[in-house]
Image 1 (cartoon, helix red, strand yellow):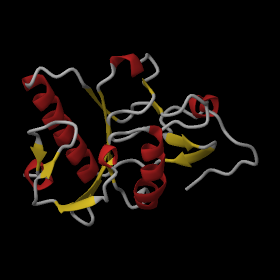
Image 2 (cartoon, rainbow, N blue to C red; image 1 turned 180 degrees about the horizontal axis):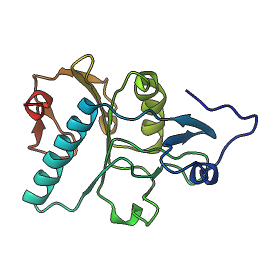
Image 3 (spheres, one colour; image 1 turned 30 degrees about the vertical axis):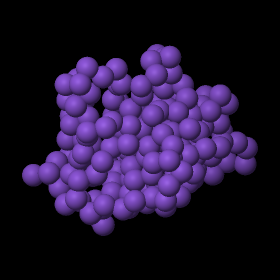
Image 4 (spheres, rainbow, N blue to C red; image 1 turned 90 degrees about the horizontal axis):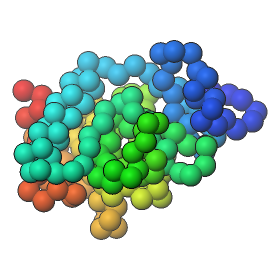
Length: 181
């Protein structure tokens, strides 16, 4: 739900929020973020571990970051997001602030308050910014929706019990149900 203000907000306004208050800024509008659920945290932690382990085992150079991690998708100061998981392969995009530009792969884990934002607003935002791959993990519906933006293909929907092939890593398949065991 957007916080109301007549003028547009900037990244500076995000940094002025009280300690502990999480929010994202999209096109000058601040969206308050609810605390994640236990299931959300479990999926995030297990997926982060799986991705880090795979990348290290293959000698990969990409970095994996979990929220809260700042991603500045555009050169302007009107958009700031904190994806649940961000995978960045271009080290030149990393700064002390976070990621300056589009991560290669973003994962959002849906909560009741973020459903519309994750499926609609962020989908468009990430595609336009140049994100290569976007996963929406939906615990309530027990499914993962995958967008391979580089292929300009229709989204694919996978039930949690089915393995999902990762587009930016040949050979990596992830079964969300296995992460929850």
